[in-house]
Image (cartoon, rainbow, N blue to C red; front, side, top):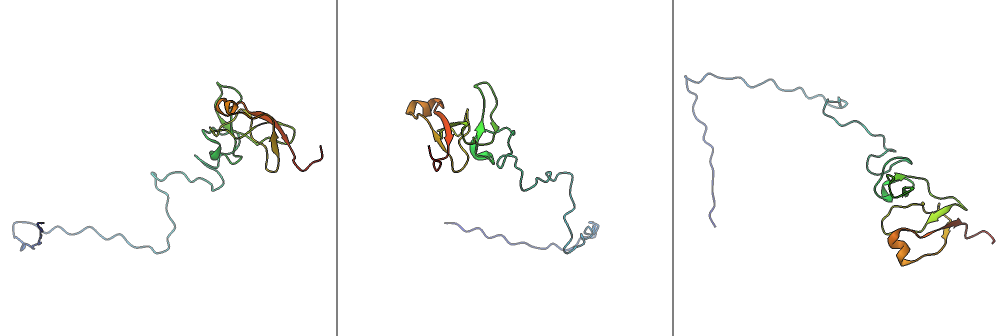
Length: 137
């Protein structure tokens, strides 16, 4: 293995080269607030998101992006948008492989009662109705 050693040598001042003064130092301002710059990105409130933590109605690709955990579209030609989860007695989808839905899963505490099949998981057609498992039938 070869080791390379570099040494810096200061050259003496030459009368032919004029002295150029250093630029003035930038003053240090302790505890100063950040002054926005033209190239700073716009501030985003903590409760809103650009890619995650999306509100209902905002465009999405996957349910994990939505506050409601439901990225939904009404038909095969619609864009996916975040939507509220299904309430009791509403049509619901069982969990899918894709993380997107034609009908949203049920709200917390409710169960999507309906038929389930492997084919339905693949084609995203496992639908049912939200029921409260604690209510008497």
